[in-house]
Figure 1 (cartoon, rainbow, N blue to C red):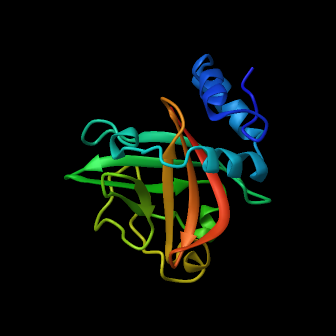
Figure 2: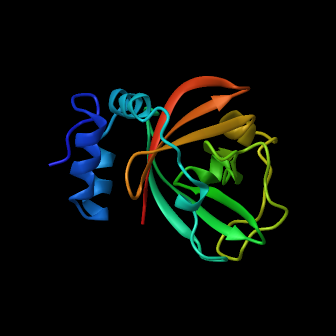
Length: 178
């Protein structure tokens, strides 16, 4: 059993996750609410999420199953690819017909990595939806000015927090790499 982040130490949560398959980790993650996602974010302070944890070989699309702390439509995927020396991705989810695909570039400064929705690639691989910026309506309401900062919490797991205009939004998410 994987303990809840709000009730146990980060070491015990990570140890519990590492004993389970990817599907079991995803099922566990799907049951986490805002309190647990926030606790995991806080407990992982200072743990670097290297950019290499997000992508595979050049041109390989890597799927990260995601769970966020929003009250609805909180299951999603981030699909990420290393392409022409840049790491890019988008959000694959049921509401993308309204919100847009939320294209982003993955950035790093060596101490942290983040999804940068203020910058998008100039083109997309065939598996991705066409490139669309995050500045039009209604995309800007969801992704406009957003940066998702990341921390590593296991071999396949990352925890993140959303920021708009360098201010925390109070929203958190977790990713499990397939």
